[in-house]
Image 1 (cartoon, rainbow, N blue to C red):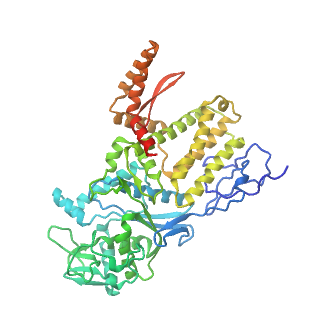
Image 2 (cartoon, rainbow, N blue to C red; image 1 turned 90 degrees about the vertical axis):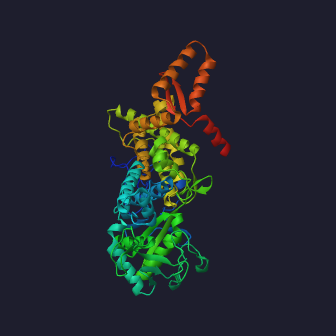
Image 3 (cartoon, one colour; image 1 turned 45 degrees about the horizontal axis):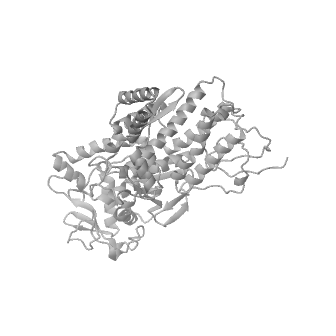
Length: 560
C-alpha cells in the first residue's frame, strides 16, 4: 500500500493526562504516520488517518505582536524554558469594570498558554495602593487611603477568582516597596535624568532622546495630560513626577528629599526590576497605558540602568460602549460585579475572548446573551458526554479510535496551535470547537452515531481533547452540572421569572396542546422565548434551557 503521508506537522501538546499510550487509529496507514509535539515539552502521540493536506505544513512557533516594533515576532525568551512577565495591575480605589476584566483575562490566557507550552513563568502583577485617585476617594469616604485600597485589592482578587484568572506568582504593592522606589529615584538623579523642585523630583524627558519610541509620539507633541500634572515649576510640560512632596492629610514616607510619596509611573519600574531584573521578557497592560505610563516606564528604567530592556511590549484593545472607550472617568462603565450579577462569569470570560485581544470589543446585551447561550451549549454537550461515559464500566480503549474521530481531533488540535501561536487568536479556537462538539452530539443523539463502532472510545477521546483546550482557555468549570444550573439561574433572573413559574407555563402549554389549543400553546412558547427561555420538546417531555431573547436575536441578525 502506498504511503499516504509522511510526518505530519507538529502540534502543541493538547495532552491526554490519563492516556499515556499512543492513540492508534484502526487503519492500514504505515507506522511512520505520526504527529510530533513542538519544543519545549513532549506529549502523547496520535496516529491518525487522512491528514495528507497537512503534510507540508511547517512547525508553528509562538508569535506575539510587539507594540515596540509594531509587528508580530517569534517569541524567544531571554532564558530558555523560562519567562518573566510583568502586567500593570489596578489602581485600587473602586470596584473593577469589565475593561479591567479584559486586560487580566487576556494576560491570564497568555500565562496559561506559556505554561501549557512548558515554560516556567514568573508572572508579576502589581497593585497601585498609593495614588491621587485613592487619596481623593478616601477623603470622600472619610477612610484611611491604605485601608481603602487594601479593601478594593481584596475585591479585585474576588473578581479574578470568579473569572477563572489564575493568581500571579507575585502581587506586589507600592506601599511595601518604598525602599526599592526611593533607590531607583536616587539612581535616576545620580545619572542626571531628573531634577528636584521644593521636595518634588521630576524626570526630565529632554534628557532621554528616545522618549516616544514606544508610542510613536514626538517629544514636541507631548503635553501635560492624564496623570501628568500641569506645573509651572517643571522644565518641560511633559516632565513627570518621580516623587511628590508630602501634603497634609496624605500618606507619606521618609526620603532623601523629605516626606512624600512616589509618582505613579516609578512604581512599576521599581517593582518589575525587583522581581524580574532590569531585563525581562514581557511587559503588558491595556492599550491606554502605552502613553504616558509605559513610555515613562521605559525612560525611568533606562535612566536608572542602561542595560534595561523589555523584549516584548503587549497591549490589549479597549472595551467600548457605543464605540467609545469604557472608563470610570467617562462614566460609561459596567463593573464586573454588575455584569456577573446577571451573567455567569464564564460567559463574560467567553465574551471577552470572542474578539482578538488587540481589537476593540463592543459591550452589549446581545453579545453577553450570545456568549451565555454558547457556553451553555458547550457545557451541556460535555455534561451529556460525561454522563454516557460514566455509565460504561468498560475501560476506554484508546487504541480503538476510528479514523473520522481521529481526524476531527487532529484538525481541532491543528487549528488550536495555529491560532494560539498566531498572537493568541482565541476567536478562531472558539469557532473551531464546533466540529468536535457536533461530533459528540451526533454520537450521543443520532441513530447512526449510537450505532457507530467504538462509540465510547470516540466520546472519551473527544471529551478529553475539548477539555484540554478549555483548560488552556480557562473555561473548565468545577462541575458541568453545577455550572449549567448556575447558567439557568442567571437566565431566570434576567427573565424575572422563577423556576416554578416556568414549570407552570410548561404545564399550561402541555394542557393547551392536549386540548388542541395550538394557538395558545404557541403564545406560551413565544412569550417565554421573548425573555430568553427556550422550550425543548422530546419523547421524554418538555424541558427548558436559556436562550438569547427573541428581540436580541433580531438585533443580532440586523447587526450582522
